[in-house]
Image (cartoon, rainbow, N blue to C red):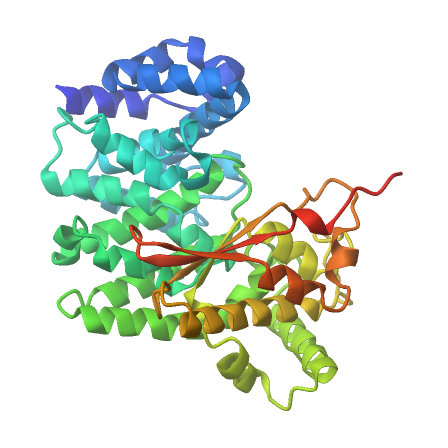
Length: 435
């Protein structure tokens, strides 16, 4: 009974309904129906509204919009996206494949993926998964044990493909999955691992559509599906954990050039204009490297530089990093959205990454608490918003400033997650500029 009610309710959410109720969702019958289907949400939502009304409304709109976007995809027609039926055909096929295997997997993931935001925005994906278990939100939904685990794991790791695509992380960010005891049930079963990768990929695209319906281009769809294919190939070796880790690390090294292009927003800009191609961005990165190598007197080529000066960078997954990396790449000019054929990468982008890499090397060598070879969460905090005029990037480009900031970063170890943390605080390195 719960299965059919939940499926019918989810299928009834549309963009027409959302457009009429966007600012008053919590006063609708649909909102009450959602709580009826997941009773603990009543208290979760109430506390979220009391804690931060703006965040509550934003998250609620986003959640319902992801469901509306999923329903559009399942219909094979998504006019709100600006894409025609041909452009979304493969996404439609992916949604149909997942729905055929398990009709409730995607709707439940979408309803519950952000409930953790009401308690802990900083780690909302993990918190959402914890709350699903804590409040038994998957009970009485007609799910098998394998389906319930898959839903929790997609929710818990739902940022993986998104941060991989933007360059904030590498393929190594999937390694914690391999140590996750619950995930072993999925990992040992080829149909389950395929369903997991498929659901995670589809979720990543829908999560973007849940904020802005026209933010995904055909080129981006192709890139997301390529990641899905690569992950499918790596995880197909489910009987050999060593081979999976080897595959992830090899792919991380090959992915490094794309990561740096991400700091020039290649992930959202390629294909938007004729000159914005992969080769164009690759050329910009190589030009920036050459100027950096000349400035620093480094006698090495691009591949040698990556092997010698960014050899630990695959271990890095940035948290809140793009707010510094993107403006820094453009020299802090404030023209991040207006890339031209004359734009050049700021050499200090490489300088920041080299210093982070060097700090990681040093800590793994002398700090007995660090987990050698593990992932590093590099957390950026204290930097100014893009829309405020400050002297931040002027200061950041001063000689010796980047070295000082990175060296003052605090190192800790997250034993629960099995990773290291480097917290880089920019708060003391900028001030407002008066108009």
